[in-house]
Image (tube, rainbow, N blue to C red; front, side, top):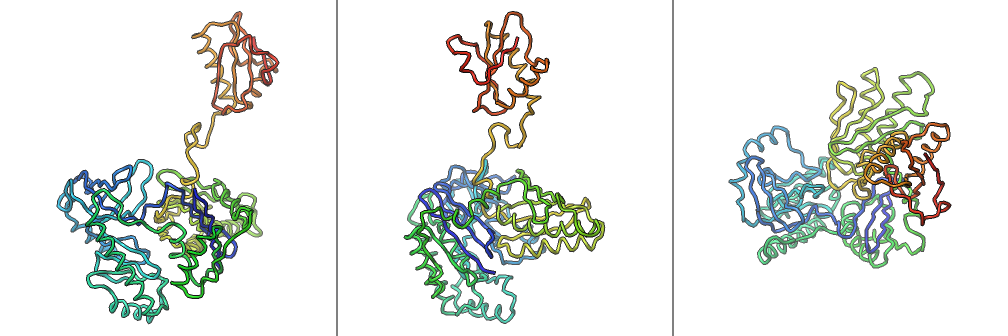
Length: 512
């Protein structure tokens, strides 16, 4: 599998696209003023302690106070993609968690790190367990523990890495060995440990010098995080449309992967870099509610506040043999595309998939297996719980960033996010009621009613057929005109002014 990373840099935003064998798999966007907070370290001040919620609110200098749960003070950091903790141990840790009031007090100054981005009405979730990510390791200064990524499956390699880190690990600190450490020399790993240890020493120094609330350490910008976390031997090229940044990235790659800096290229064409590589149109498609599959079947993806629902439909696909084979083939294709869409749209939280009903357990198992296999490519942890009695597949995907739709889209002010508007027939009745209301308030001989073009056409057609929809008032005249800038829901009723020529009204209709 060949990977290409395409970076679009401008003063207002940074966009990173990951292509795998030419297909867009991930898109990350960071806008100026809306930078990612996860990983940032703050010196905060405890504002409120809520024993009933086992939590505290901490002022870290953001627009909303951050949320500190008692378990995030005592328990080991659960950020890691690779630490395996048994359910029994989780329960044991939960049972021994003391009251939040025993851990922190109002006015106390503490150093915390953002676990989860703030969003909506919720503040950021924070922890006192600091983690400093590097390319090959994650340093945990507050936990004396060594964990090795479960993606490193070779037992000899796991033992080798464990022996190395037992020798080079700073006393009293822990670390997580990332997948990128596989095959690395002790010298390279030791260099990274030294770098992260010095970084931690500098953070501790800033904590002592600075008052609260204050940012102590900010995570790397998006481009450099991408190089740190995604640039590996499978990357064929990293293309950047900013010369200065391309040089910085090349220097960074040269340190971690000597010789690989040749893969970093500067894009110097006038054409938009994402248009040139066909990425712009794919981003637009990633925001569509309906996703077509190659077979003619399609997915419908509905993102709600509580969860994401995905419906699978056969669409135009009729199959080549019997019904059950058609359903199985469609569901397997859909399972692979669902894994792709979750990753591309960066959807997290609870996900429910309504596959086409299958009769045999064998077919159900095959679909679940296909889904789990496709999800292995995803760097974000996803847990497939299984198929419920109603035939719905339940799964969870870790929330690491804001999903794509929340970054690029906002709630429609007219439909309120429902995705539905009043029909022309319903709007015609609303026009009638609005006219009656206005006439009762303001007495005049002539009135002008402005509506959206589709609503005007509907009312005009009804009128032409002798089905007048506007009310009848003796001695009053109603003019109707389309407002090309009006939304379907907009209705404007006003007194008809004589100084406005009749021939200037668009598609004028007169009703008595």
